[in-house]
Structures are given as C-alpha cells and as structure tokens.
Length: 67
Image (cartoon, rainbow, N blue to C red; front, side, top):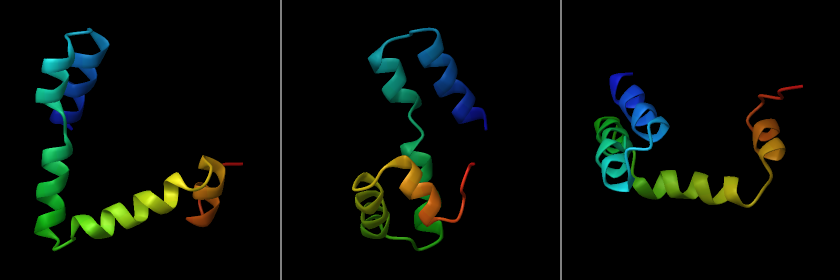
C-alpha cells in the first residue's frame, strides 16, 4: 500500500517524470509474480486479450459485470 500511495502522491503533486518512474510499482509486481512462479509471458497473453476488447467486454468476460 505504501508504494501505491507514494506513486499516487508523486503523480498528484506533479513531481515530474523521473520521480514518477522511480516510484513505479511494476518492479514490485514482477517480484510478486516471480514468487508465484508466474511468467511474464502469461501476463502479456492476458494483457493482449484485454487490449483487443472494450473495458465492458473485459469485465463481462471475467464475470464482474458492473451494472
């Protein structure tokens, strides 16, 4: 939570690109994926599928209809 809050603060206070990059949580996400033996190729496959459809279609395909 702390890392997420720091990233939001950095962006909200317009501290600049360099600071935003330094607070990016992608690294932490990658560490957690590695701990679960999840390969980046698996993540990319899911992201490619999501980018090929609308947000509504994505939500419905995961069974989280927000209506």
